[in-house]
Length: 476
Image 1 (cartoon, one colour):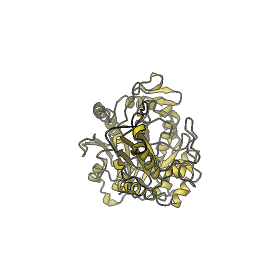
Image 2 (image 1 turned 180 degrees about the vertical axis):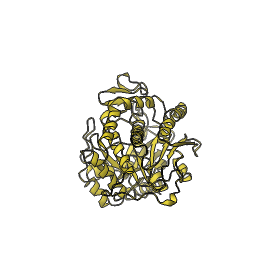
Image 3 (image 1 turned 90 degrees about the horizontal axis):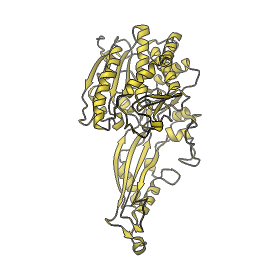
Image 4 (image 1 turned 120 degrees about the vertical axis):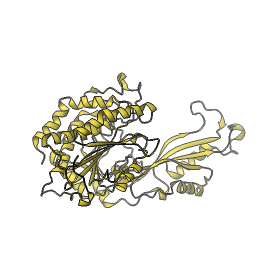
């Protein structure tokens, strides 16, 4: 059990304003990976924030060029205490999305952390700077108290998660030894809700599809040609309805996942989604019938229309347009076969009378999850529930995306994600914020989890330490 003085110190780090000050310095770096100037800010963030933070943890630090020439660099910190101890891999990302300067409420500057009650506003406050600050600070508190961690630590930072993690999979494949560990514990994405401590074990994947009905160069008067020329917008509407009906139900059997596994169903039983302040209410009658909202969100595939257009909707003319396009996205859970998605969709549309619809994939990312019965999962849940008076929600995966597959499929690790944000944080939008209450609770939870990793007890199921052939070197 974590000593009470460690709990108090974790809470005091937030109460004292030290957490806010440290996060302010992080937010001030404009690490927008989608913008050229962001690469300069990323470099400064690595050199001025992360390298000192890792060095303070007794890590040797190495920076690696991205194997993808378009991608920003990677940073790896390594602290090796003993080959007999388990090895923890942590992960975070230094980059943020576009700051959307000028669009924040009350004239807020996205690069200046500002507090309004429990909400701490700033780009990256929730995604991901505030979250990896929690974990860095928890490790620092533990090391200051004990003089050692009781486990080996590797910390991987990437700088391009917000642009699809270019080069991350290739980097992990090429640096297996530098990233070798027993488990990944990381923080990103949202909790189930602001009140509920959450563990999730993976992420849904995604495939973005462009449907293009390009029939002719010109638009023709609807009075002179209506009824004899195929309308691409009408055709596109029919094609979309052949893929997903007007109630959000997928109509293509090959786009559906396998039957919901019993462990997933059991884990999601009683899980309530939405209901937080500002959350929209789930719509009745939307999505796959016979499933709970949690099962539809975390255990099922969805096909969403992201954009849809033809001609000029704000200034229509009496003419049949020549072209219509839509972007759809399949969000899918682990176990779904997506190897032939464009062919499957095109074949389905042809069979339903729409061979004139061109289908192309415009980006994808894989789904992955750690099995719910992995011993690390029960260990983490038990540990967290011993330090909080709340039940911890365990989700098989979040509804969104993370590069979890790099850790499960390439590095072969069980993955435990302990998020320190919530669904209403407005990440990727103006007014992104971190809740101070979650930061405070997150500090306690992360400190407790890392403390337990370094103090296995006979009364608690604990995974075996790394095998000797991991060949851990002596700590530098």
